[in-house]
Length: 101
Image (cartoon, rainbow, N blue to C red; front, side, top):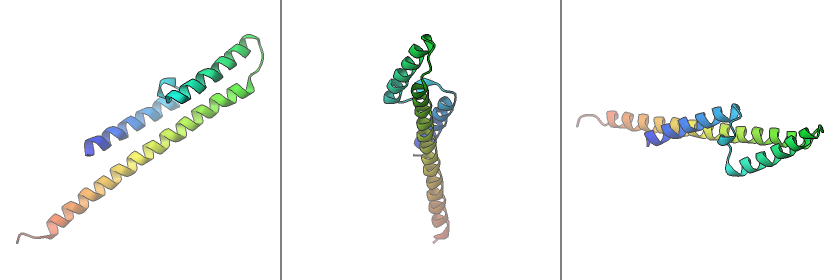
């Protein structure tokens, strides 16, 4: 189980790093669709030299929500690792306390 927990922890950290670098491949499928739609509106309005404040706000909201989710996933993975370490330590301590008889 430790390998699974370690892998989940690494993946969550890598996803958070990709999201903070604004790599759109780190977004979920639904978020990618919303991001593409908002970016298309923003680009289309930009070509006509108009502002698109709602589309820009939507893009920022998508990134901030994705970052919050990624941070929560990372915290959950860290919590699982901490619990796993505590369980192993308790099992080891119980084994030692039984004695040799």
